Image (cartoon, rainbow, N blue to C red; front, side, top):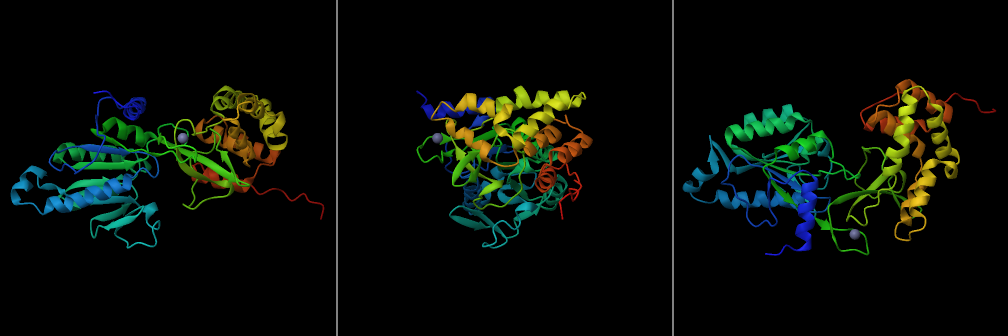
Length: 383
Ligand SMILES: [Zn+2]
């Protein structure tokens, strides 16, 4: 049978994630509770229906539970019945759906109530404890498993090998840079036995293609401003539509409409400037950050993006990335947090010398788990 273009795209995408050997499912009718020891990844961008998938498993389990005792033999291993489903959420999600009951598994367009079979956890140790308190439960749905510590992946793999437990992970695998989200996501990919790739429509108004990617952009003066590649990995904020330079928006886009300016600049220019600085030659980095902050058109970043995008009407939107504030701050944070090329001492001195935005930097460094206390600016006004 000839494959259609969508399934070829899906296959290529999964190969690019390093998933050639797992069982790939393309449609989902009724869930199979008979096969033990599976670790199922449900991957897809926002809006692709990952939570609806979980709710479907939950509903199917209720139907399967109504069957006779003979069925129980085929769905049970060492006392754990895979028709017994438990739903795990992050403690950070606890207040996310204030309009629903506390035990609700909420998704766009509805919710299921899970009673005692839902819990909020903060790490792998808490998951281990809940699993041991529920020896009769065979299926565990772990929402956004990528957001937990790496140890969680091994806890689940060991339990599933030992007692036939079934784990389902509805999760984002790629970040806005189209890189694997983090090391927990890599381990989930490594240890999965099955994958259900879900897609959504590209959210660009001119497009109805399938999309796999999460797109981050800022909204400034009504304009869509793509996030630069070196935008901070983590920005903690709410769910609402955001305006301005501090908090980004997210949507789902296909390859063509997923704008990601500045990747080449990051590796071709910014990182080498950081490497020079780490050897003691800080002036080239300082000059570039200063230009970005005070005279953007003099910066190498501006020249790079301009040469690349200014003459292509389809790509010109990438230049809007420069309308976002705090770009020098973001570049410095990238070198400090992700590349470890800038010491805390150098960071402090650049903040002082270039008069970078201390409030933005403190919050972002904290979000990215590298908190630094920045001294408040000395009061030098003419009062
Ligand atoms: Zn598109």
